[in-house]
Image (cartoon, rainbow, N blue to C red; front, side, top):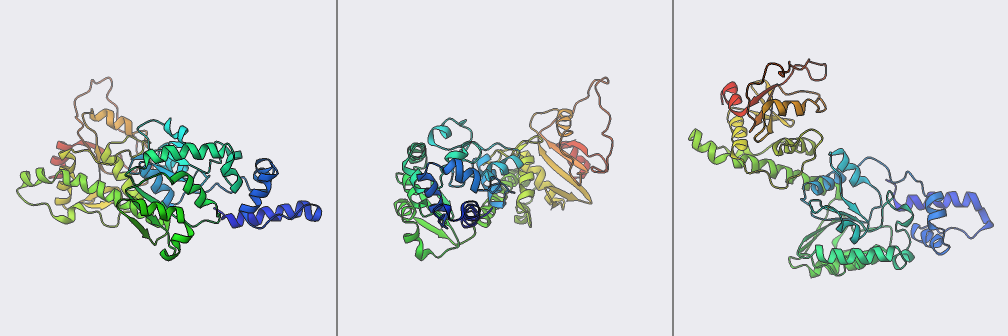
Length: 405
């Protein structure tokens, strides 16, 4: 999306073209421009509606937005606070089949369901209240923004106590960002403060004094990671997903070693060259999510048979192939389906968006196959160009026998 400097330059071009020398010149900086119109009572009616492109905050979410959305949906991040007024994180959540719980003050986020990790937008939101998004320093001490910040400060001071605080990017085109941070985070006492930004650490105390002071209050100290925010978040999500899958595999290690009498090889617990989209799909399958459901778990289910079938596939020579496993030329998908009839599971996934390459075998771990009355038995799904041949659905015992595991 365009920077604040780009928005200010375009706003000044429109203003100068419309009024010329008939009015006072518009300042070049976005903070001064916004304050100019705020003092005139025209911030929402003139500046935001006529001089700022209404589509400037739309676009495709990047890897960082997807990481935040995914980690909020699984509650790996318990709270997210943003000064952005766009809806990129919410849009990324929709693409991951989830709804991000959002609010613009402490009251609205406190009303969200307790099972959700809230996204607090302290500068406001272009969707729910565009006229009162924060642009000018004068707004901070005037209602309704002052009330929102006061409400957010109380909520954050309670909810950030003893938390690890990850701050992605502390540089800004807007000088008043430090004032907002001071008002909203001033009373918080986090466990650890990690700031991610490629800039030099030496300038940090002067550039962001409130945030620096917050780091000094942290019990476990302050850490500055010199990296791009999007890259760091993408890697954080990747490490989380790898850990999730590894823990599923480890859950079956003891059963595997008892049953086979041999040790599981360390390489079987790692997934080489897997990207975030691949691991996200695999996590959903290992959680037992139905089509169009997001990943929701921070910790995988402790089910030894799920890890056992994966280790048996690895021991048999299976290698990762996208979110699936390839063994002896056959593509195999592993789903967690505890205590469900196999035909019901298959019916649920018939409504799934067809993958470009369908697995040859789907192993429904935990499902049970039993005979159906002849009047409700369904025929096989007709093959299509997209799916190729229909997948074979097997329970775990059937797969062990079929694949010689």
